[in-house]
Image 1: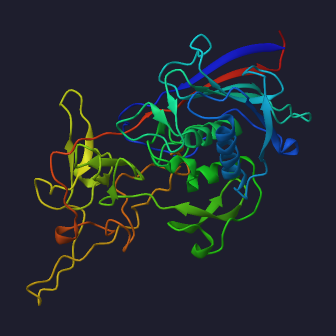
Image 2: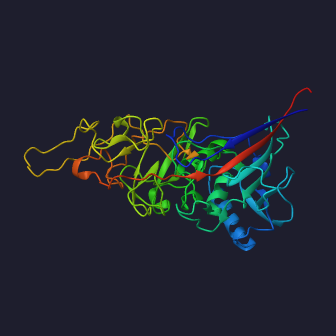
Length: 404
């Protein structure tokens, strides 16, 4: 038996670059026959929260993942334990407040410590051994978290739900910054619920042909019933998809629920507009432009609701020449403009390219289609840009079968 050590570190930057891709899987794979997977909570709790409060957080996060109907695994809260985070047969959650025991970096909010096997498809299907540690040394944990002025105050349910995604076998996704499995922590509570892509990643890994909804009314407010087509399994299921803000939708420090980024118009982060990263003006709505918010040597390009230097682009608005007061109609996206689903990083676009030019459908928050002329929202300039902080680390011990 030969052993190898693999350490995968996922650090979250304060300002993320363009995101692309969708959910991805890591090496963790559970045998559905072992479900529900029992997980314990270390009984020390954490300074700012009682053990009882943490237990409520744990059970809420477990329920979030267990409600994915097309996945054949589930989690079970097994109670409190005195056992710490070690690689054994017991799965433990522990908030570590001793700096001598926190080995995963001051900027990591959480870490999955996993012992996995190279060939989980063996007849025995040896289950992985996974514990999750949380950084109680450098962060304060408060239900609901802090805001953008309190970036070291984290919401335990949002971070735990993210780390449980790794525990179950999802890697970071690259599609929507609002997805639970995005590599960056969003300082609101939006990551405590799952995006369409988070669910799709779980369904692909633990496939069961079962739907969450049949129509929009079956989903929570602000969500729509959408179809996930599994090419691997040759079948489809319907899942509730959260709405995340696109170009022109409002956002704030308390509600950063944008598909990509929030451009703030006030220094206290109380108002802002959803936007996206870009490379050229063509990546933006037709009367927006791609602007550099930083220096030429260190560019940071985002779509701004400022007309391009050469005028509008990408749309041919239909104006009624007979009406002198007619406003520009909202154009429709081309068929080639694939709107992205929340990534499975936000770990969430099914292995596709995140289209920074994606726009809302007609009637959605920002007006939809091409935002032109009088239909385009305007925000004061200059706009400070603030994004996310770091989420976690994944440490994998991999056992390989083979000759010594």
